[in-house]
Length: 256
Image 1 (spheres, rainbow, N blue to C red):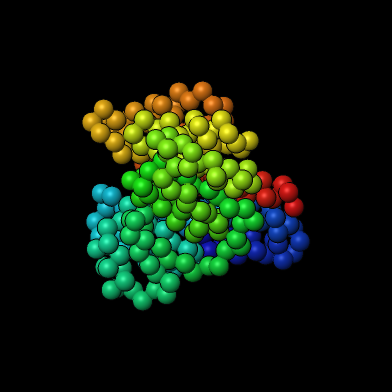
Image 2: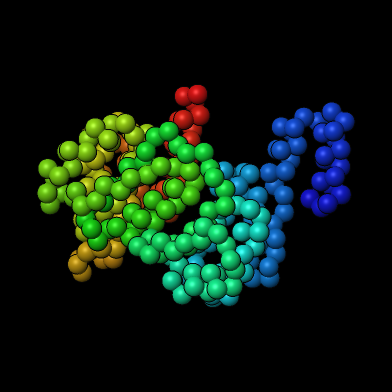
């Protein structure tokens, strides 16, 4: 859609030829911005409720910096995942963005420009061990930049299962729960058998040789005997958070 088409669309709204909602529906698929090495989808916020996110591995610092700046110019919040601190330093040096920060544990660059309406409910993010925290923090940062309140409950894995039970009252208030676990990944099945909401299981690459870089945890979670457990890819805290936020939004919207 070019400038003239947008003007024509607005004229139709002005003249009551179409409704505002109909115009919004047409604008959901406005074109992307071609940077030569990336096509930025600036209207993902309109379609999906959150803007495009930058996945940093295998991109150069210059590419990430340019993508980040172009997204920021549109006024949206910006999130870059799996980012090295040197990339954050380069962005901070070149641009004077307010509220720009680096989340070291999550390895994420965060720019908050919009104050989003906060969720009514809290998203529990449970880890089996302290070694799973990087993935859990990636999930937490992702959820929070989408307006979802989140809380990490750390180190309550099956090696000491009694640690988990004190948190059951919090779990029972949740619409969806994220469980992050490496080694054999059994925690997701345990939690899934205790709660009445969906559980999003995230296998991590934490573990000794026979864990095969997270494959053991992945297979355990996929073979869970607890109903209502669904599984992301290994170490994919980002995807787990996006899914959890979308579920929470639908639940909260239906409860209005």
